[in-house]
Image (cartoon, rainbow, N blue to C red; front, side):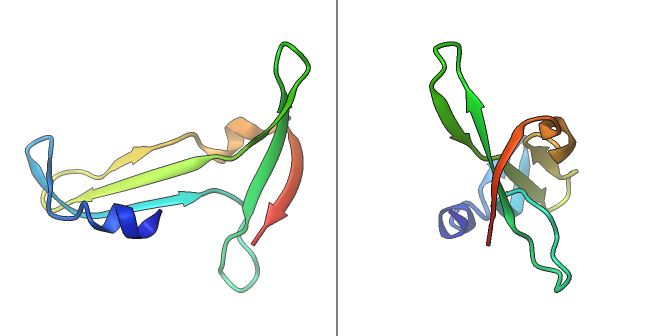
Length: 86
């Protein structure tokens, strides 16, 4: 995912050149400064269970404001946490 996002550096977005794009799955910060990845479980209206991850994308432009896409981790409070992955 990171390699594909790095290929987009230099493109223009909203009139500004993109300096860097970072894409990652969210999770808790460990004591060593690294981050894990939370995997959640949800059931749809038919009772079928699905794995759920939260992807975030940060787009840093050369001169303009950065653009942040994704949902803050706090929005996932109350969902069933299935596992924390490294």
